[in-house]
Length: 174
Image (cartoon, rainbow, N blue to C red):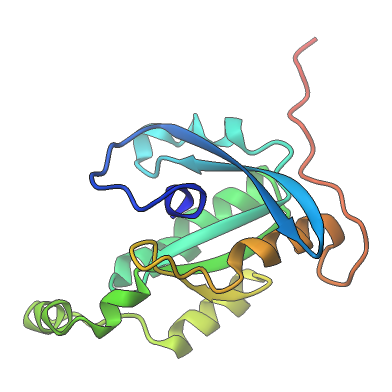
């Protein structure tokens, strides 16, 4: 998603521990220098991931619209981790929204006895974790529905228009 926003949809997936992308974007007639971090999800990186959290203004907690496991992980893994290490603004981001229109994918899910995430399900999780909003995205189609602009505004002004700080830095050991 971040690579698609800053460049173009990647032709192949290359796993990494941390990816950092930068972009200068215009929001409300102001040029903003944006730093975006993508962290690895596997348990092997549970101790490394929080090293990228200091000074974070907004977290994108992502799930796939076609994976019940991913929405469950929002509540059991990602939300608790973010709240523990850096309680700041969160945006719930549903990825791969384009696949909800793919009849082959939907048939495959049905054949496996599975179903995609419903909008109601996602809205409930959004409320449960206190996210500032639910966003439907498709990196493949370049659909981000104001996700990044809203994140910038929230990072700068908060939900109610007041200037906010970011997650505090991890103190250095004496």
